[in-house]
Amino acid sequence: MNIVLPLEQMTIGDKIRTMEILWDDLCQHSDQLQSPGWHGDVLADRERNMLAGEASFVDWQTAKKRIRESLS
View 1 (cartoon, one colour):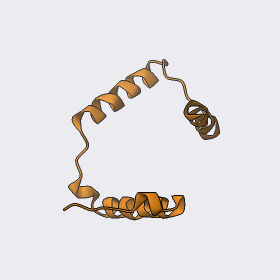
View 2 (cartoon, one colour):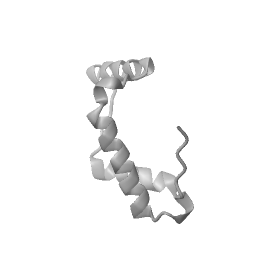
View 3 (cartoon, helix red, strand yellow):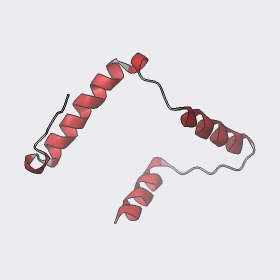
View 4 (tube, one colour):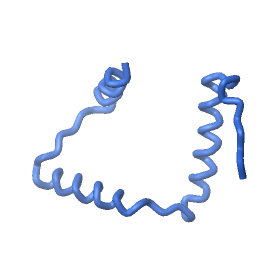
């Protein structure tokens, strides 16, 4: 199936609504999705770092600010 969307003509709101519709549909069929093997490896590494006291955390507001700054 080849789906073509008029991305150039869509507003940001249209694009976000489209992504939300797709995400909602994927969530309803999550039992059919399989995470790649490397996801488990990354999670295990992060848990080891956390248990060893080597992980650092920031609040969500700080994380969003850092993400925005890295994109500008």
